[in-house]
Length: 551
Ligand SMILES: Cc1cc2nc3c(=O)[nH]c(=O)nc-3n(C[C@H](O)[C@H](O)[C@H](O)COP(=O)(O)OP(=O)(O)OC[C@H]3O[C@@H](n4cnc5c(N)ncnc54)[C@H](O)[C@@H]3O)c2cc1C
Ligand code: SF4
Image 1 (cartoon, helix red, strand yellow):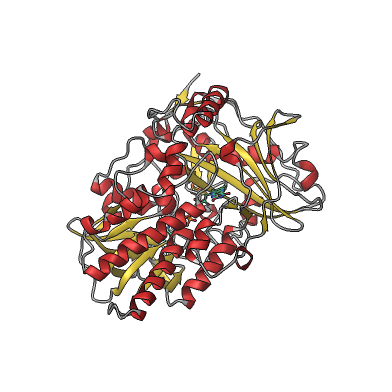
Image 2 (cartoon, rainbow, N blue to C red):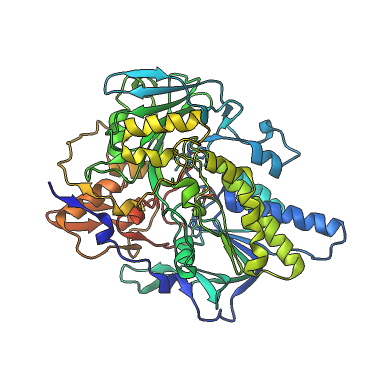
């Protein structure tokens, strides 16, 4: 049987495009702080900065008004955010001490929970592992939370720029001095059209990278500065749907087992989103071994299982989307997440606890810590690497790293398959992480060989199950058809590799046509899965991509 090692077909990072050494032009916009990405991490950072500036002004601190800009690639806030989500509210209470949970746009409190082990025809309820308890938490749509946080940030004086993707860091020596956005209005051959818009340069005393999972800028900064981590970062792909349902769901549901093969790590979730709506999704580690594994298709098959089908029959698919999740955990943490003029927060540096599938409150907490370190640096007039390393200490001494340390090997144990992994993870839970406590080594996802197998045919029915093109339509994708491709395909893409890419991408961007690879770039919904295993993703014209409303 032949195998594919995806790394052999990938292009290196386009580092010379990400790290720009030419001095900023005369028209560059000057800010005190520029934040890339309006997700929970970036917005929490912006809001905390305004709070600190206000406190400083009230106590006669003398720093004066702060100019803070948040640049977001989505056309409007929230449109590129996707999560489960069950949210731990603790960081909301730290950021908004005057608000009760009922003032925050959560959908509903978690009223009950169940975990099932699935086979093709059955679902066996199993005890809820301690890492998966969600009592006291809330279900929510991250799009709604992001829109709400954006309004609060704007009211506090933050400058929010939606539709401004950043494609480069402006640097001087080892210091980051700001960012540059993508141009807009290019035709397929990268020639300016009548709607051409030039890139914008934004300089700042501190740049905060809050670009989320598998970020281009964080990958670039890390490689440029040679910042190491014990293990490489690894990722999962989550494909998610929001349904209008005729049958009420009262509990948060998680499943293990079918439809995943035994040698793939992952599971599904189904969450109630208030009366008549549910979110359901499937998350699969990108270190799977079968080249024809297709997460979108597995989710479609899963919906026909007796556990899910009754909630969907007679209902309606409202939205579809996908996104990767950094899964490397504690052992994939970078030795530093700060440098001269730069701080990196949230998913961009992998602050996710995989066994509990939580990242939102860690992202927000890291944004708050970044704000505190940046503010202290602004007060001292010193934004050097040494001064900003205060941020690393805050994160390292916090519950973020304590939680990630406790579950440090749980995800990694599953590289040996579901049953061995489940057994080891059980012992780790009982022993509080002490058993199998030494670092388990993991290769990067693209280094894992894939068996070339024949895909099982699947025909969607258009009612409960959907093909990729219908799914992309349900993401609201509004990319201009005549946009230049933003995907960098590597060398030596054989027919088998083209077939692998067609299964990795949930949005039908890659197709095998005969022995060739066809790339339908406008379909891309920025999930970043092929950036992990295949063609590189780069930022494109602002406002391209999905228009999620309730993800
Ligand atoms: C399927 C799935 C289920 C999950 N379930 C849960 C859950 O139940 N509970 C939980 O707590 N966590 C969950 N998570 C994890 C959680 O969603 C993330 O940890 C969290 O959203 C990270 O926040 P962030 O601000 O770091 O990144 P993001 O939320 O990804 O925000 C990053 C922002 O940066 C923008 N951006 C990216 N690149 C650029 C650029 N170059 N220029 C400008 N803007 C850019 C993006 O458009 C985005 O708006 C889940 C994740 C997934 C994918
Ligand atoms: S091409 Fe776009 S949608 Fe497809 S996997 Fe890559 S990032 Fe995701």
